[in-house]
Amino acid sequence: MCVNDRSFYVEVILKAKAVMFLNYFMIYHRCNIPNSLVGQRAKYFSCHFESYNIIKNKCIGVPQKERFIILERELQDMFAWYRKFQRDHVMEKEIHEQMKEFIDNLDISVFAENLHKCRWYKDYLKIKENKSATSTSTIKNNKSSFYANVRKLTQCLEDNGLIYTLKLVKNKLLQRI
Image (tube, rainbow, N blue to C red; front, side, top):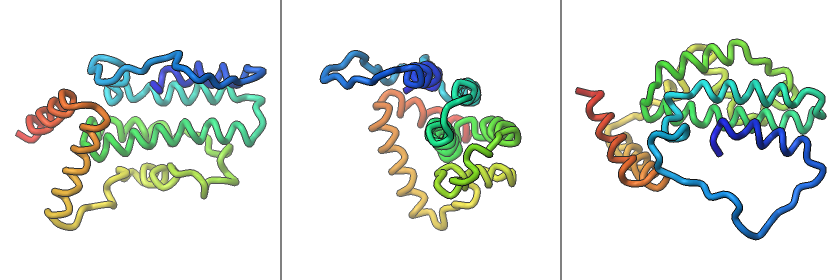
């Protein structure tokens, strides 16, 4: 789901009197559209912060357990994309600075009793210390680095298709020149 759609879905779910599951598709998700918001997610990473703040405001008055679930999911997604861009070296410095500013102002009191359950909390602490999420996970030798890159390339192919992956590889190679 695109980050700009989540606040709409959360609002609908919070206001719904009932939820019905259907056995047919009502929405089709298109992939590999480089000019879409999803295709340029790194460039528009700040949409994560806007979405989080919109959803946090929509959760005012929602019982603590449900509020925790909703906001925790938002942060899981945000930190997952942060880790991906750090690992793939996509706008890593810019996104790290944006994340640092965001978490410096993040109120984590809603998570206080359950921080140990939050998948994003270790990354949160690293960013608080001004370290990237990948800075402590240095690959020890060239062989494991090679296999890690092959896994990333394979995952990118599966997630985004051949054309997007080739463009990404080309851009990374050009950045190293």
